[in-house]
Length: 198
Figure 1 (cartoon, one colour):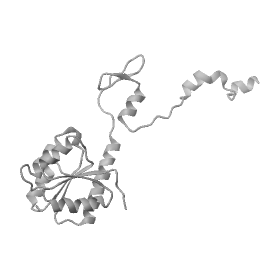
Figure 2: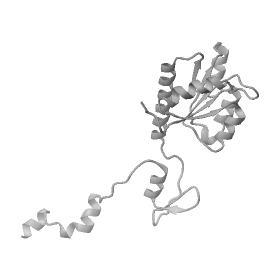
Figure 3: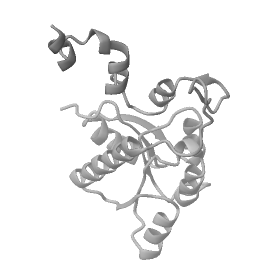
Figure 4: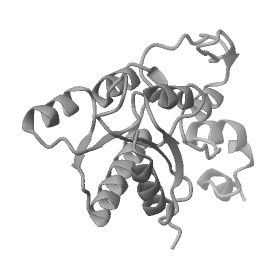
């Protein structure tokens, strides 16, 4: 059953059989998969693509998983992407080091498929919830006459255009009571005064 077609997961592991097993498990649930055999391949991929979640091994040639996780978390566009360690290292020091490097979870090999999928689903859900809770922060220059806002690129635009482009809000247009009375008050056949005159 395909459930998660829109979620892209990057798997970083130097063991080909691990990549194959994980790829089969995740693609079987509808996840899109990208794979990398080391930190270099992972960073090449991440330079152009932003996955929804990263599964990361620790013991790899060259840059290990701890260092790669720290690098990823320093990249602005990737800072909010959840990183889950999937490793054979089970000692407490490694687990603590994993969380200190920026990971949101630490899963030991050999892993249970159902548990792995449940953790992935949970972290993807949390990521989506965080994105939906984002609000506009900071100071926006606004024209005192036309009420347009100056965006981060220096262009002036209507307040609603700015909000629509920076959030998932949709506007429903209408008139407040004051404007309605000002514009249509004299045509209001239902107001008491009009009824009295008739």
